[in-house]
Length: 327
Ligand SMILES: [Zn+2]
Image (cartoon, rainbow, N blue to C red; front, side, top):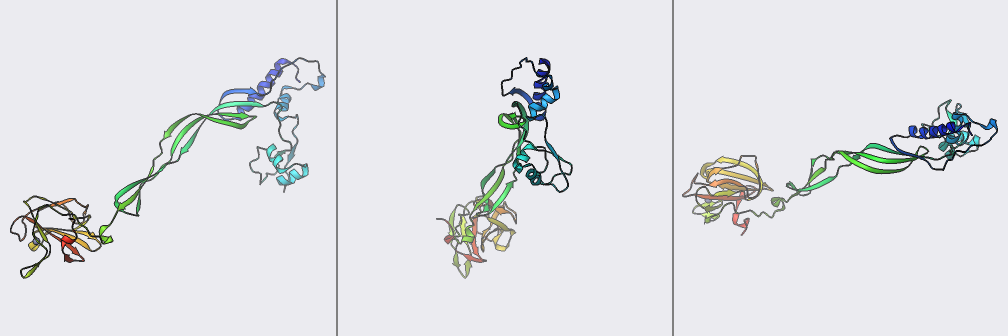
């Protein structure tokens, strides 16, 4: 009870202000859950409270807080035990404690659970930022050997700004609804490349592409007193020559009777030779893919007309290319 209506209204406003100040965000609305009516009454003058006391009575549920000053060596359990309270009750009554494990000497501990007389419900607009975790994307990559992986792009979390309507009852959060969200920073996906390249040579299947079009004018094998170490594929000067399989160029240049020669190392002991080239389009050390144009047909070296002299070697030994080529 307070002395007049004006004070009573101020007390209610003070109670509301207390919770508005205690909670973060911008106020949307505030309500007292109970229906409050102000009534005029004749009372004992001794029971009239001043504004401050009336406010504390509503906030705490009682006029006086029973408190305890922490002594040397006290634990929450000791205090609770002495007061015939449970530790949980004690923690509930003391939301201000920074640590329940270590009490500061002289710290004031409430010995009564706060039960406000009125329940004040505050709704506020709260803006906060939140992480957007990045996703991991897997892509196939035929330049990487099957079974191997490579991180192509590292992931980065994004950030969004969330606007929420938060409802607090007596200062404690009871409900939260998102009303808006805005992306401040888009997350960057982590990209992992998974290899799909199958190494033919290392698997021993050894099948090569025909390196050029044309007619086979001279087969592999014994020729006169010597040995023909490859096959000759005849076509007009300038016809494209392709890599019979993927690999690394191990030689480009002039070499005796071969004329302009390209050698590709395919791994697993396999290499292919492309001789009598008119022009070469690759450099030593370069990686080439299966079917890549590497040279053109010519007449360099010892020839009687434009043709490609093509060899397949296994560990340096010439083999019959026909048994490694497609039909
Ligand atoms: Zn030849």
